Length: 371
Image 1: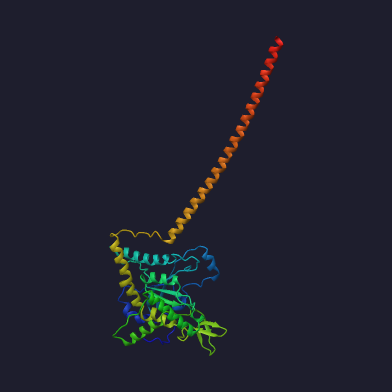
Image 2: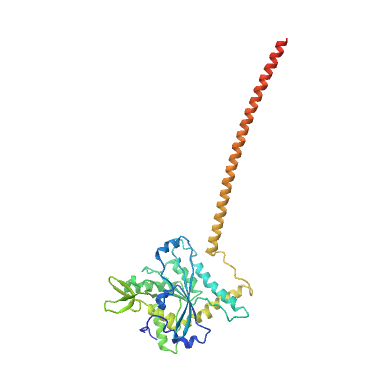
């Protein structure tokens, strides 16, 4: 299949893979971070209120949102799961911000592995992530150190597909230069991004796979709006004063290539590589370090646990300070009461001495008068 197909956006081509996927139990596909509404031409995820983005930053935590949908085309069902990660990379200090993402992927492997160890496995829930679209900010420079670190950690666990978001903000020449810089950084850091397999027996599919690899990182334009072009066509895209950016126009972006990779030609390979490579790697590692049935050890450096620990520590410190303040006030009150009592005692002693002196004086006067 070539990349010049004119079929519409959606899942209409999924039945073309039915003869392959039918050999597996069901068709489950889990995608992390994706322009999901544009990709499947279905309103799966509501548009987010951008005004809430900065309010979210106050929580200083990376969330993991799970969206599930059942798609059907020509009696072919796909159980689609979309994993979104709002809050990722939005903070000044992004130290360990990737851990919730890594933990989520590992947790799905762990859940599946524990189900696989049970006597009855027909009702297993499979939430393993089959593909992760890592969106790169179109800065025009290169990957940020945070991008490099996160991509390294994700690539060892999931099929990583780098994507340049909002590619219509760059001119074609600058976009190609930016792509090459990103490729250089990926090669230099030995980041294993997903590579479509080459079938030596099928030249057409081999040509298509090479075209997909040459286009990585994919530049995309996300839009669910129909707009009219200057020549009168109705297309999916974004309208600007200078013209229209078309989602399906390969001269504008690589969205059609990305859609072809995920839906039309390589969905089964993404599922198989997750099963045979990433999940088996996790399973082997866990079986080498744990006894059968033993629970997974929680990582001590998980930022969620750190935040909870820090919050408890702050609460304990504040409580100690409060009690110390109350103790100091009580101590000062006791000291003041002691000083008052000492002063009263001194006054009483002075009064007693004065009275004793007066008594002695009166006694001396009485003795003198008797003489």
